[in-house]
Length: 399
Image 1 (cartoon, rainbow, N blue to C red):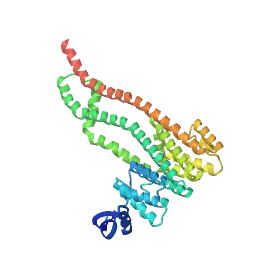
Image 2: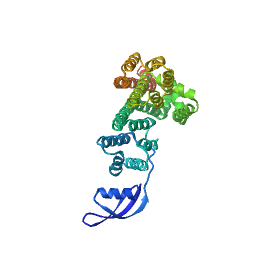
Image 3: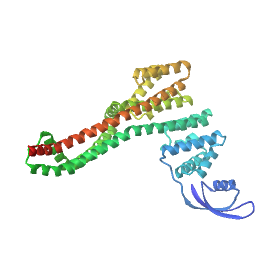
Image 4: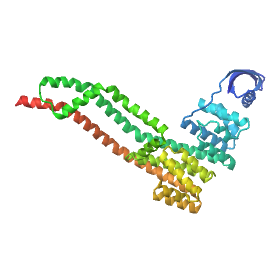
């Protein structure tokens, strides 16, 4: 995209001057013609072309939604991209539409154009668009992509909802304990020694723990991020470590089963979408394996795909992996026998989505009182260890 300075004339012969972004001079002339101006001369001021490498999910959803509405209304894809390039409020969307417009104008298909932006569009989305172009169902495919991306956005919000509150409370608890151990308890120790009283066991434990915080506060603060970085490095370097970590992730009480349901719900939703748009079963399983964020489930899908290649039914293949519960396997069998596998997969996704909503609500309702009790126990023990000796001294003074 370049910035042009132009001179043009309108129907009354009046001269208009201005600046406008366009791919080239022919594109500039076409833009001016749409507003009733005839180009006289133009020169490039500056090149403002920016390659889009990343794009927020919300903007991708909005981008596809606008394209789908225009294409469904009968507007050619090239014209639709030109409209987005000229009228979109998002600079990133304008740059993306401009890049796609240029590639299609040069002879690429829409699927080939979006494939040039792997950081914006996933392999699944690229495959779906190519399939939609081949089958002539591009408007329907774009609509399904928008629906699927919205659903994924909701699942991401559910994940944040599940993890944010307990993480916040744990950080608050850690901050309070750190303050008490570093600042309050050391000041109180001097006062306690001046009293000349015997120190109870729990108070000695608190003093020892406080001394560890005072001497090694930097190590305590550095340990969590260093441990996380080390686990990430080991996970990236050794597949076995990554597998074990992902296995442990699914085994976390209460949270692990919900994360597994989220992954499987996305798998079912994406697989249904790909099957519905005419992508072959085996190819769809390859893409669904790649979108899974958990190695344990990835390998289970891979083994199931190998069974399907060897002639096994889809339901039998997944039943052998014990990936889905028996109810889901029965739904798959019904879908296979009736020829409505896409509907069965969509129902599975709906089944999991509803279950996720209920499970997240239950876990949140349980986590809040548990964390409150935990914080109360920690603070109660600290206060008991602090105030216990003082109370004993006051009691002896009264007697």
